[in-house]
Amino acid sequence: VKVTAIAGGTGAAKLLRGLAACLAPRDLTVIGNTGDDAEVWGLYVSPDLDTITYALAGRLDTARGWGLAGDTFRCLGAMAELGAETWFNLGDRDLATHLARTAALGAGAPLSIVTADIARSLGVDARVLPMSDDPVRTRIRVAGATAAGDDWLTFQEYFVREKALVEVLEVAYAGAPRARPAPGVVEAIAEAELIVICPSNPVTSIGPVLAVPGIPAALTAARAPIVGVSPIVSGTAVSGPAAQLMRVRGIPVSPVGVAQAYAPWLGVLLIDSGDRACVPGLLAQGVTPVLTEILMPDHEREVALARRVLEAPGV
Amino acid sequence: VKVTAIAGGTGAAKLLRGLAACLAPRDLTVIGNTGDDAEVWGLYVSPDLDTITYALAGRLDTARGWGLAGDTFRCLGAMAELGAETWFNLGDRDLATHLARTAALGAGAPLSIVTADIARSLGVDARVLPMSDDPVRTRIRVAGATAAGDDWLTFQEYFVREKALVEVLEVAYAGAPRARPAPGVVEAIAEAELIVICPSNPVTSIGPVLAVPGIPAALTAARAPIVGVSPIVSGTAVSGPAAQLMRVRGIPVSPVGVAQAYAPWLGVLLIDSGDRACVPGLLAQGVTPVLTEILMPDHEREVALARRVLEAPGV
Image 1: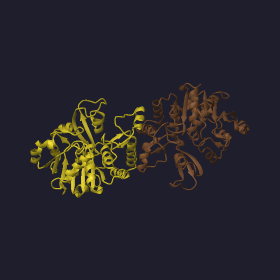
Image 2: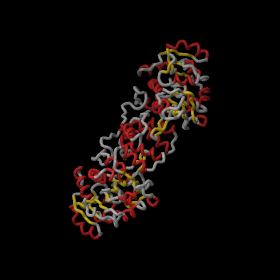
Image 3: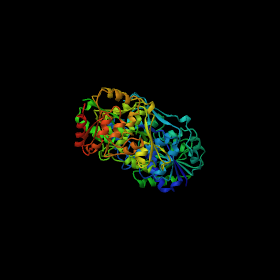
Image 4: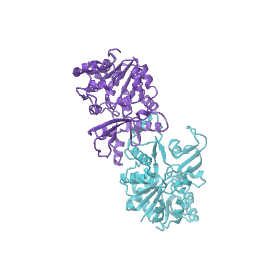
């Protein structure tokens, strides 16, 4: 079955590892969020694309959920000595990815080609596509000025530097109105036999993808069933600041809110067995709920959840 | 005594370590060659300025003569996997220097400020100045095309990639006619009580410095004695391709040739005791020869040679 998955970072990486274990690698296409992309030390860093690529290469540091397993941080230590900002952790081998990407982008290559080249070099057979070759950047407006004196933060400033501890007033996707889907994105949605919305933050991981003009329409027009996995369990996010950001957007912090964020094209939503109370709300929105074990603490559970996705009603 | 030294890389680093051991740190100013500067993986690399700075910080890998002692090469290994050119070795901690410099230059800071900031961060009290904030690049024209198909090579392509094994036809200093001495360079020459020409390649280490308009005139006008240390011993270079490049320039590969390259302002030249035969030739050029032990295999000999420089006739 040809699967196209829309993915953010850590949570998505788990499900993607599970899907990769169940599918022929060439049957998996991943459309990754680039709203978190950032410039660090002058380098173009793409946290979600890297997490996806490293996960599919079997190299992700699964304990941290980002970066390369076994990486060292010697350059980071030297940067600190030189007085550089070091709140964003870049490992020594991870740096190579950012250096290679920055150089290739600087030479005029689009992000989609650079991403494919990096994935191929790391031995990934699945297709990894950025949502867009054009810059879309998630911006978070926070209450009061931060220590750095700004009120509109980049996602990494909000999430990594401020540790998501500041009050959020507003989320925007800068550049989105002018962005076009990257080559292959609309086709991957149209030609898929199953579309998976990974258990990622609906506001800052899947939200930026859906902010790219043409992508929601492609999802609405898709012939394949669209199956999501809820990133919310028992009223809180499995990881990250999804709950806070959904609240800011006025979306209920529950699987019902997730379904609302993915209306009208979401067909099925996998939710945790403990969230049985959400079933009527999902049915009322026309979304078929599937109750299952949502958490993926190990690879076995990643594969088990991927199987449940592949066996969802209508697939 | 206030000393201003003109320096290339490896050989200069040894003498500078010796001088630093004999002087109050603030009495030492080093004018470094930037003709070897290169872009590697999109980063601005300044091999001679870094060798000088690392040497004065006590951090140079003295066995290799470049890079930081104890550095690792994990990013380099990852770059190789990504298909990048890896003939130029950049260590993981060394990378921080290039990242910080590239970011600062990109933000509009001149090389002289960036160089001073890096030196200060690494605990260097001596002053390290680039010869110029403007780009001057040594270019080497070689016979026949190299494997890469080019005949005008950058210095690093010639020296590191081709290992100086190709026949050289011509050496040029691209950009030199439009370059200005960096702020402080002319003053450091004018105000010095002793000017030292380090034992560096006269063509590709000291040559680019002398190609910057205004620097030869400053040397000619200087009130301080100018004392050189020969990089040539017994008709060969102590290290590197100086002999081949002097031949291309039509300069004898001997201390006499070195004196010729530094006419008319060189006053004293320290030469190896074995090169006694060059004494008449030097005297004929008006240069006072000092016979001594030129090689610096250990720190004791670095200090001993520095003392000989500081005791040279006229100082």
